[in-house]
Length: 475
Ligand code: NAD
Ligand code: UGA
Image (cartoon, rainbow, N blue to C red; front, top):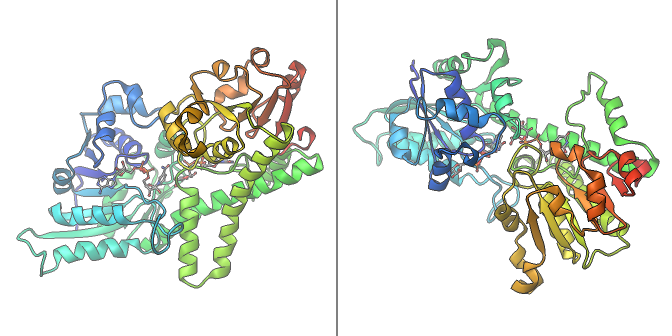
């Protein structure tokens, strides 16, 4: 059925829903975009007059919000109203790993997808195009379809309203920290489905700023699966280079040089070959775990175990960083103060989901040290929550109150510290005032650089001891 799309509803005002609808609204001034969420605080933050208080930090986002908000871009909790007014609905809700029950720790928890489908089935009017934007296990469209069908077929849910639906898959490939750039200039747009009119309607929206040859159309299952596989391939490259970083440390080779030499082969490519403390973020581990679950479901045990290694290596990388720090600091960090620079899972985001910093900091605290943490964008209360400080020392509040300090500058965070551990590649860490930092620390001053941001020669000239991940000369 031909649909002229004038009004779009996006369910889920998160890291994907907010930025992706903001860019679409900016590029399509004749379409109304309504982003809805059940979380009133998030919606309030999206509507906040002070653009520094948006719920998500992304370079370039606030400028677009300023241009479009309340013109053709709206944020509200009115899920029912906006679903019923929409010609097209993007589902952009969270799909985390199941914590309990069958498939716990691997399968995706689709309860939010199911809830959305029921809301859409209940409130939609006329013909509606439903677009999966969340990352979903292959075949999820069947679940959505069967819920929507149950409401349109005659029987229990038969109403006087005539409703019909087309389902499309349109996975999102943006990376946090570069979301706006990625949305404006994506490598490709992927649309999966079998209703050509619906595909055309979605394509017409993207054609406002994307060239036609960058829009790939496939069947719905290939589209759903491609998203999981793209993330698995990216994460696999990180585990590969991190495995090599350990070898470099034992052979006096330098991981940056190896990555450069390998990446200059055009068949391999230079991107995603930066070694570090392992991949974090809300999606890589979740999506590979889901892939493993699906492979096991189909009896493809060898394939599952291949992908399992990508996650194991990632965990091992963090373990070996922790044990290196303890070993270098004379075998114990009990009672010592360590400064963590960077808590977000990567630079240019305030997101800490699955950040390597969480696991590394928790393990360092278990070893009995005190932490002093600075991150330019992550709020102090988020750090306290992520580290679950109350859980230490058998819940002794007095002892736990001493475990963690959070600071608003590097120089504040390094006072009387024994070591600095760089965990996120924020721009400002490439240009630290090493002379001033050295004077504020307790000798012998150590820097553990897991992101390759420190100029080692310079740091050594001030008297620092430096361990640089993947660099055999500084191990
Ligand atoms: P998020 O947790 O930031 O946002 C999801 C939002 O959906 C939340 O605000 C939640 O309150 C809301 N929500 C859940 N159920 C709802 C319902 N029934 N009605 C209304 N609102 C509801 O998640 P995210 O990071 O934006 O990720 C969303 C999806 O996109 C996931 O499947 C993820 O794998 C995928 N994805 C994420 C990224 C990323 O960079 N974060 C990139 C590409 C794809
Ligand atoms: C990733 C993908 O890059 C996106 O294409 C995808 O849409 C998204 O997941 C998703 O589905 O959620 P994101 O997690 O936001 O995006 O960020 P990345 O740039 O991929 O970084 C992920 C992690 O890998 C970070 O911890 C980062 O520091 C680490 N990383 C990345 C490295 O250690 N080395 C690299 O070379 C690249």
